[in-house]
Length: 323
Image (tube, rainbow, N blue to C red; front, top):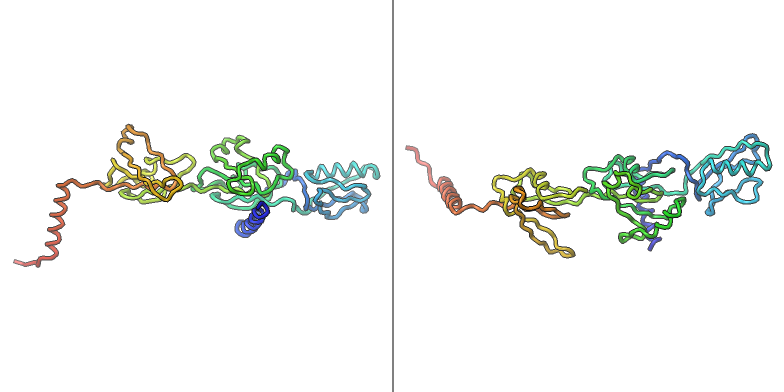
């Protein structure tokens, strides 16, 4: 199942590349890994040169005149240069060594999409946290729910041991890879626990806010999104432009689906008591339907409407005579 999930992720990432493109975050101390290609040159010593060597699965490359392969996994260009200088100093006087990364192939890009302004794939060549990646993608849209899901598709190659240990301990949310939910409000406080490090291959989804619907005797019938701060009945009615003249404010109906069923429940809310502070504001839930009912007419008003309507009908039927 895990292989199947990873295959789906790879296919999805291929589609994202077509749609979103791929953007690198500038390298600062890039840690090499299997599949990366590097070159090593020693000034004035062509026999010691290594042209575009691919790092093997063990994280090593072969260099001239060395008995064992050179370990390059999770090391920077600077680290490798120091290692090569140390090895060749036994053979050469003061060797001048340069190391160059030709290709970065060891890590898949991270993908961020959903309610962000610039969905994209990002090559991570240094440590990046979630808040920085959100900023790099233009921030969240007005439709964002305030919740972000991060799915880790592979064990972080050069992560600290603690990060590697917790890879299989996170909540799966029905997936065959660990996935965690983070609050945008907590992330903005820049606390490391709620602003995690993003690793190559991570999939970040900024979730869309769930809707409620306001219909009936309001000025604007509309869908309203519940953001991270929640939504009350008073706020929803305000966003719907308030009541029209025939609205029944004492008996507003909220239709809400019963848990684990397709059967609706109907909740009566007295808006006038809420406005007077005699009742707490009603907290809406995703997919609630707020129904503002029409005011029931009095008997006198009903009789007057019938008489008025009858007179209008008679006027339309009877002939007109000019005297």
